[in-house]
Image 1: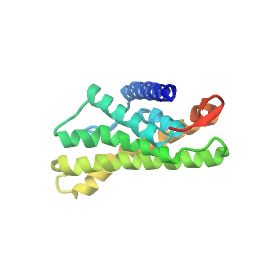
Image 2: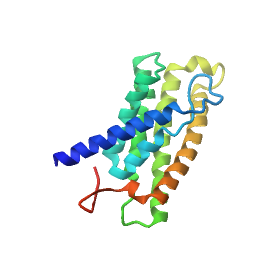
Image 3: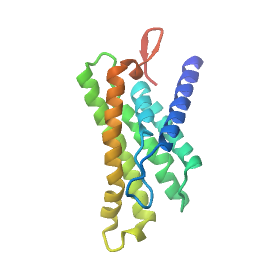
Image 4: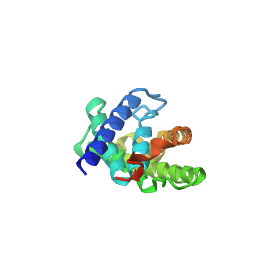
Length: 189
C-alpha cells in the first residue's frame, strides 16, 4: 500500500513539474490583464485520466500552487485562491471521466473530451468569479458577468481545443499513458 502511495505522489510531482514547465512556454495573445494559452493543462488531464478524480484534483492543486509561486498576479487573498489553487484543482475533476482500460478507442476519446471540457469549464467558472468580484472596474460600462465570461472564456476555449487535441493524440499513439499498471493490473487512485 505504501508503494502505491509513493508511486502516486511521485507521478503527481512529475506531472506538476511538467505542467509548470509547459506553462512557461506560452502565447500571451491579446489579453492585457493576464490569461495566456499553453499546454500546462495536458499533464493535469493525463494524470486525471490515468489515476482518477482524486489524483487529478491533487495534481491540479499542486500546479495551481506552483503557478502561484512562479508567476503570481495577486490583488487579494480570495482572488489568489480562485485564480490559482482552486481553478487548477477544479480542472482535475476531469478524472471523474477517466476511461477504463477495457473501453474502445472511440469511447475513451469521447470520455476524455467530455472530461477536458468539464475541467476547462470549471476552471473558467473559478476565473469568472474572480473577475466579477475583483476586476469589475475593467468592465467599464459592460455587464461585469458578461465581461468576465467573455474575457476568461476567450482564452479557455483555445486552451480546451489545443489541450483536447494534444491529449487525444498522445493517448491514441501511446495508450499506456492512460493506465497505471502494477503487476499487470489497472489501478485507479
